[in-house]
Amino acid sequence: MRHPESLDPITLPNRKAPYQTRDEEKEARQKAAEAQLTAWRALLPDVLEKLSRIKDPRRPGSIRHRLIVLLVYGLLLFVYHFSSRREANRELSQPGVLDVLRSVFPDIDSIPHMDTVERLLEKIPAENIENVLGRKIAKLLRSHKLRALLVEKRYVVAIDASQKFTRTIPFAAEALHRQKGDETTYYVYPLEAALVGPQGITIPLLAEFCENKADDDSPATKQDCERKAFYRLASRLKRLLPRQRLLIVADGLYPCGPVMDICRQRKWDFMIVLPSACLKTVWEEALGLHRLEPGASRTNRWGDHDQVFWWANSIPYDWKDDEGHYHRITIHVAVCDETWEKGGQIQTSRWAWVSAAPITRKNVLARCNDAARHRWGIEENFLTEKNRGYSYEHAFSYNWNAIKGWHALMRLAHLLNILTLHTVALWDTVQTLGMRGALRFLWGSVSGNWLDLARLKALNNKPAQLRLVI
Image 1 (tube, rainbow, N blue to C red):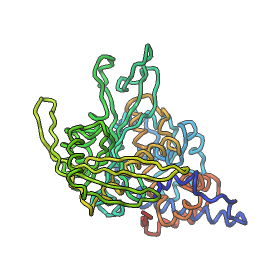
Image 2: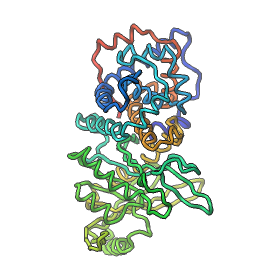
Image 3: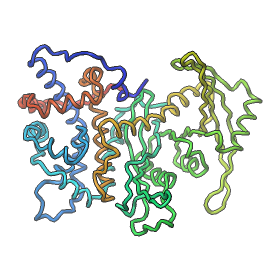
Image 4: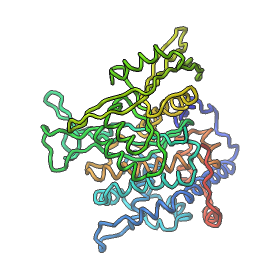
């Protein structure tokens, strides 16, 4: 199944608006807004409570807007897909928007300027905001709201990194840099972890920025990198989900001794892409075992692709740590050879993974197709955040801590939108308009004087339930 947010340019119906009268449209907008705000009432109270507990670094005598108000408006910038602080200032300052928000969340009692939000984010540790995101997802997992994402009784966590933006000026000492000729480029590069599921859904989880020490801007100094960031991310992930059974999926940068050892120490399963030029001794052993055991294979039809799986188990792998000590672990290899027809010609491809658990005829499809192949979900997530409204690559700030703070708010907003738009009450709207179209429809309803505020206030007397279509 394709990721729902990728349906926009392909499968949405090409037809006129279905409303015959203004009253019909008004009722449709009212119901959609009520569904969105009901989902928010189920999702946001504990989020807002945790955000409100963040220590306020401002001088008491200079405070005009409460901290929670500033953070909520920063969140709304991304919820409604504004591309800059300037645009958010213009759109979110409409009095009618405040009336709608206050009808359900009376604590939202003022309209701040986004420059005020920026100054706050420069001072608040960004980790405090991101911890709210992580704890919300941990709560959803404990309440079994996301059980449909389980594969082999484990939640699949995809790991990957992506570049946010680059500049030719040294805007922050923590930024990474690369040299090309006489020009130095400075860039922001976060490593992300996301929950991915066989349905195609991707849920942002954690981010760990690759960053140099703030007091060292020497180009000769060895820089931070994606793999070092993974070690830090792994520790945070274990603290966040200490008892959850996880299956880590990652690209060809990660099949190495230290990464696999970290996963083993934390009792995590893994399926990591194994490039043909990587771990040559493991490849030689796997190919040798395949020749000796040709029966360790299985065929499958996956969409319009014919798949032939084969595997080799119990392969010893020796690796050396930074102190020069050798270690041996036992790993397993799964390979999928695919063929399909395109334009009258037969196409072929090969996929290979190193696995923490033995591969069998019974589990090969789940581990490879439902887990490992859905590593692309995090790449689709990057594509969504970059090109489908979340302004991932926009420089909302040049202050390093604020960059991380805006990033955390963006991912919290993305989580809120994913869960809201996957509710039963809004799913028909999403099927018709797509994810981005549904959000535009909702923003037009909130900002366009369409809504009956008395009906919105009445929602406070009803239980807020989160019923998801996953």
